[in-house]
Length: 271
Length: 271
Image (cartoon, rainbow over all chains, first blue to last red; front, top):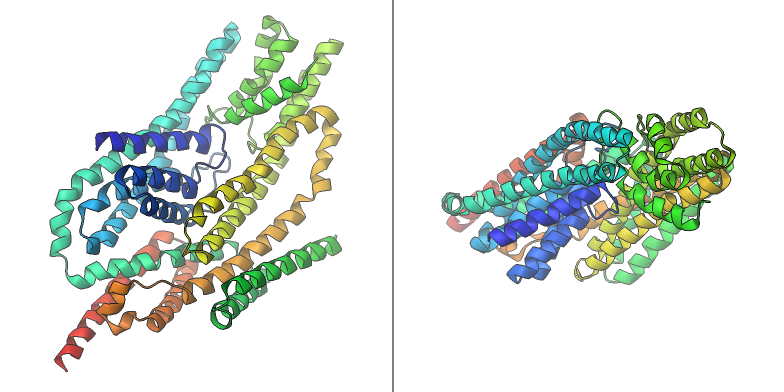
């Protein structure tokens, strides 16, 4: 188990470097990092498909819930990458320990700890950035001394700070939940049936939560018509054309193209 | 003196722009790190040390579009080295004049438009083809390609463009009309969100286990609940802008639904 925990933490650390320190190729988007961690750990425990599926769902949840908490200037949002990798890691490594009916309640607990990891990650990010001031002064010192080799090495020390932050949070959170499993099992057993079922209903509503956040943040009064148009097309496709999936898909693509062209024309005309 | 290889090399070094992100100089170290090989090629060790004041100072912009400024700086440095003139004032003014506008442009384009649009479109595709979830890997790859196409275009194109055309080259943003592109992407995101909401309500998977428990969880009832939860949560989020509050609200709602269902089941059995 220790090896698997370390692997999860290592992957999280690597993705964290992509998030802030270097590259920013979007592998750190929790949708991607959650899927990769889910897939890798799922492959190790022999549940590749499930690992990928849940890693993706977890990642998407954190990606969209904090989508407009932007890292602009000195603003540090909650660390969605750390949140998703801690949730995916602890869930994939621990779910086999529980009976299938407790699957969702365990998923919820992992999600709660993921939130915690995200906020701790954001807070530690500020600490890393404060600590970087010292490293910056060291780098400056080497620059003025003309020692550019050492100046370059400081760059990698900076990256290591971001890596270490995610590595430690992931390791602590995942280990804690894994250690907690024997305690959780009797607690789950003692819960009334309706509470256990409630978590399955809750998980089913997760996509609704993320869409509410997205729509609320992007919707303006002027774009209400577009949302309504989308909903009307959706009703048409998922009721009348429900039997003809690909025809419905074609209709959506066509409507999307129509909207794009209309908007582009309108913007050009306004200028 | 500056070759294409030097520009590509600098492009790769801009990947480390935020490696030593700190509250004193923000991306200041990153700019110096990216330009170091160019400076080493153009100047003696003593001259580079003297340039520390210009390059290790405060700098803040969006990391992807910073490349345009880096390209401009390379051009100025080459001029300085060739003509033996003092360009330090020009270099400082380029940094301060362009970092703000380019940051605003990059932030709104990448973080406010491209990222949400990419995520929502990916989510739509995945939900639409939910039964064949193997598609999700393909869609994740597509998301990475979609985002990184623009990322690499700005990252490397910016350096070449800034270097080749200097300050007038920044007119490229007018030619490409990013504002128009942003507005179109924004409209598309809202349209897809509208369809996705309807898709979640009509195509919502209900667990067979839950369906057996009670009539409350049959498909038509679940759809009504889903629509209701959507509307209620949306207005709750509008009043109090907190995703955690919706999570708590939906959890309490799920427990209540589950409790009513269990009681109803009990009464039905008694009858």
